[in-house]
Image: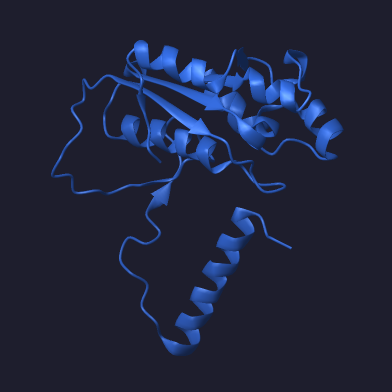
Length: 189
């Protein structure tokens, strides 16, 4: 059984502390200097200290699209959704105005199940959607979420099963083409 992310972190921290008490290992400086926020609390942890030699201009304009096809593990948050929270958190913490950050997410493949409403997720997978609160926070901060209509049709997912605010595109390819023409760059991670 895979433990949730927080459980794994607590076990690792406990093991590290026990090792320090017993064997005296040294924890690298700054290893615990990661935190969430200032935009999305609880998700998208970022390093608090980075010595930039390629600094981000405070007036930088971002238009970035993320792509996700892999479904999260049961009870886990989708890594790509968490990466989007990290993108927002780290750039705002670095001084970029949140109004200058426009993000979009194109969802296809089995990741479509991660953007279902909690009720639909329960009906399809017999559990609530672990991504629901993060989806809400991302969309509250202007993130557009678009589902591949071809994938949705393949899995029998109608618009009414999607989390509130998720858009249906003709296809993932279509969404990417339109976003590219609108000046969005594709995040390679």
